[in-house]
Length: 319
Image (tube, rainbow, N blue to C red; front, top):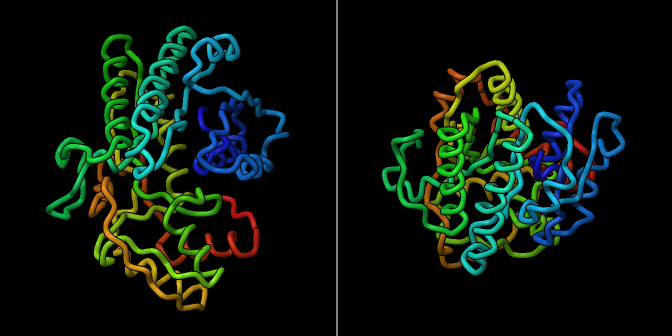
């Protein structure tokens, strides 16, 4: 698994190990946020007898090939240069990690005769959803409006090419606004909670009318687990699926709910909308439901309560 020390990756590792799988994890401890947070993410399973870790940057092709000598049944590719707004200033780095790094991992798979890939893509590939209707795979595709989204969509196309050329079985899952314990500190829910806790105004970009399909981490982990099971049981797989909640929430409502749960009201600092941010996301999850039995279980208020318990009380919530 690539990106094993991150928010989603650490939960995925923990879940797979709990199921009795052997997991080989790689991560480069990117400076995008503090290394000690990622080390803490891994602390619950780092010493697990079925877990092996290598510190590898997927851009380093030689190190990837020389270090990863084991054969594996399936690759879960979660490593990425994340963040829409930072990608506006660091396009080349996003291309190197998200596209060239993915190519390196695909070539490594070929060298090990591994034919199964689960790839984490992003809802940002849909671009601006003008009609504000649920995004369906292959139908609502608009042009990506950020370098991050461009690299994720390009990686999908590259993976599809490898499927056609080398018969790789692939599931590409477009994640919709994942949140929960261990969330990255640059993401909105974490930043809002931190501002509320420390009595600072909340920076709100736009008038609060933009909406996101917030998806709790345990629902995403269920989707990944079911996707891996499907890949292992089937041949000639090449599909894109949405993993979301299917219930978009306005930014103003998200802030209000957080403040109510925490029990504090902070001032709102309204700022201009950010370039690269899409206006609306909502997942059509019919394909994931029919193919993988994916059914999200955690409503926003419940998921936010789990996040708050973890953030304020430093309690670990196992997805």
